[in-house]
Image 1: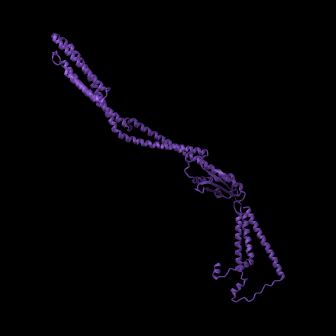
Image 2: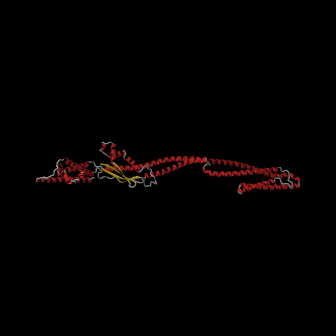
Image 3: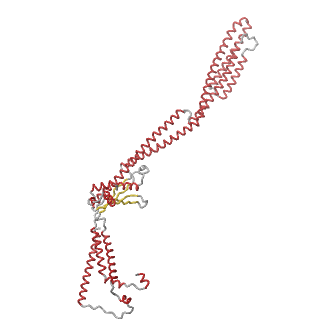
Length: 532
């Protein structure tokens, strides 16, 4: 109609609509009041449902998670979903229904599954999140029932079950985690002990061939080689001394003639050569060793003995020469006694020299065997190093695994203690379940407003329908649309005094009826508002 007015350019005739409302007032008021009254009456026949609720706060652990990590793998939302499913399980709800005697009338016609489903619809869990990081901080539990006391009792029961289940789940998770870690730790301990035994057996079996002993083996080998060189040098000197002593002994044995005056003493040149050789060796050893070295000391003792022997031999030769000049016949008798003593001394030194040579040969053989052994150790060191590295790597992995499990087990034990002492993450009731004083549903005030709207729609529909079905003309514009001529005159309505009085009385009655309907409507809406 608005589009038609815009197209025709005709102004809206509000007076015409007012006359229409006045003319069809009972078609508007009657359905309006009847529709509202019907909805309002039905709202009060609907059963009242009371809603009880409680606020549960999610408290963070009393000890920082950095100090004692939690054993719960799922986040709080998943944990709450799991607990909610457990709380809303059929077994628990059936037990609550039986203990509190819920749905007494409906239990006669509904199966337990239907009752459980009905109770689930009456339970609502509303999550409260932090506006900053959307972290779950609290949640509300609501339950609807026809009795306010029953609603509060069921809400309290659900709250206790939820808190108990959360505490039990936390404790069970912590204990199960601790038991699992204890089992794994025992396996790791046995594996570590096995690895330690293998490493110990390897070290005992290959003692002296380990990589850590390489430097000491090198030092020992170097010392053995030095000793071997010293023993070989000593053996060479002993052989030279042996040759000298054997030569000297032969000279003593073949000495059968008395040395004549002016003749050189037999053996003195050999002793002089031996002294020169010993002094040369002493000079060489002194340049390398100190005076406290055994070889140096021994060589000095040999030089002293050789010098004494030369002096004695020279003295004997001189005495024999003098005796031969004075008494040649006495030379043969004294020769044996004078030659016997130096020969015996040389033979004694020769035996000592042979013993020294034998000792040095045994020492050289022993040193060579030890050198071969240490060279073998050095040659096998790379292989032993690789074998020990493999064993050590397995041991280190087992040790690291054991240490890690031990640390986790200790942390799990702390988390278990926190859970048992309720110092971990847990739920706490902030607001206990309330006793509702007003019904939660139906909202009779809203239904009253809905009834007003429905009644108004019914009145408008009745008014428009009545006007559409009425074929009488009430306006001169309608006559002009039907008859294309101008209206020349109007005949006013002629009323008698009786009709005027009757109209006046009817007006008062209508006003009284309208006032009564308005008062009833206002009173009903106000009553619904006060009791909603």
